[in-house]
Amino acid sequence: GIVQAQLLGFAALAGLLFLLPYTGMLPPEVRWYGVVVVYFIRNAAQYFIFSSNQTLLNRTVDPKYRGRINGLAMTFGSTAKAVGPIGATMVFAWSLRDHGVLPVSERLYFEISALLSA
Image 1: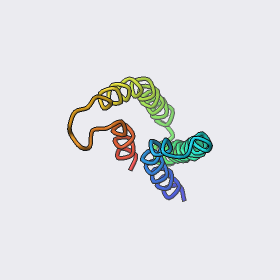
Image 2: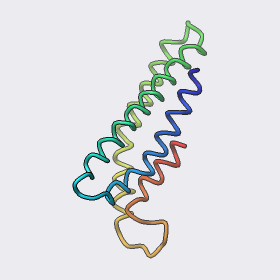
Image 3: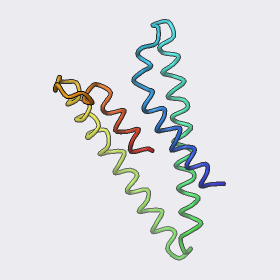
Image 4: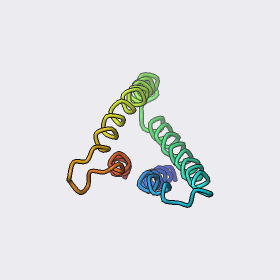
């Protein structure tokens, strides 16, 4: 059903975000193929999540309030798309410095994204 599709999308997204930085370890001849495959599957997972969210929202909200709730959902989604890259860029730039702490590396952004998606 729809909930299973959403859970599948979240699981795939979390796994792919965790694996994305490791595509840099592939041989140079196939590295970009790996990146393209990971991004293709990641985008498919995001479509699963978005479609499931909208369907569940439309099924659970009273028709009288459906337009208002859809508008709020789109507003919050657009705000996250605008603010997310700014915050993610700061985390990624901060993680590039040598902090001497084990989990802080260039993969920190991807690990945080995977945890938030799980």
